[in-house]
Length: 399
Image 1: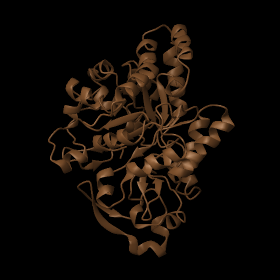
Image 2: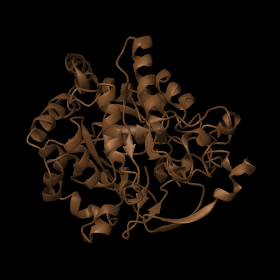
Image 3: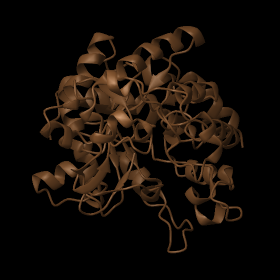
Image 4: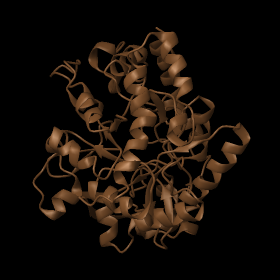
């Protein structure tokens, strides 16, 4: 996930067409997750644990609250969006794995990469046979130079290997550069079934449609491809263990017409505009979407929101946390769950009061930060460090 400015342009933070059954799906997710979260978070430790266990059942009802979501897998420890990262996230206790950010190939396959530009997440630059593919494109209003998945066939992408995206913060992850290839979404769906069988526990995934307006203009519409694969593997139902997300509300509305899966609208900084709004001339910003009126509209076609953590608790000019907003309460009031992003252990990604020292790759007081965010009543959180999140949740629930 990324943040966007008021013109819809991408900046790395780290770097309504409702269907008749929409309300039913929202009610299901609200009862399963929000209902558990709203009650569980206000109870003493033993009572919370008992109620969490009692909330078990089909689909999302089986997820603990707050839910720990492995952001691009276990990307705090392995190059993101690889089976090495996904596998480790499960091993570390993630309830859900964000596998993956979906972008298309030239021949129409969906693959898992953070962005269509792959110069920073693969070894493509070291492949002389692809030197001529390096180009500059305008991606959601931003001039971007590099190599793009839509210029490669799947067979060509499979010759590449993943590398660590932020080596300055995660130098130890570079040990694993070159070990894993780029997974396809279809491979992820098969892996999900395999892991569910091996572990004796349902594995959940949380894929995202990336830059859907951009790709639709190229004739590579994402939503139909996602829906086709979900139907092929029988994972297009409201109880299916696949939650779909996008920064473009229009993409979620399109998916709402194609599948019955739980749907989540991602929300960047308050002054940003979803790129489909930019393209359509819709002047609204994220600040408009998180008003009670905007949230009611989202609840007409989605079951949750994925806001930045700053929309839950803003920071002051020094980077310290201030007073929580009413977003959690307002979203819950219309039946939406909240899965904000992204918790990371390293100093630069933590609120200033939780940093320890100044080293860019050193861990701060991540447990303190988790505790503070959990206390707002969020229903889950994306984290690069699932093991830290799981321990922090245990401290919070039992504390």
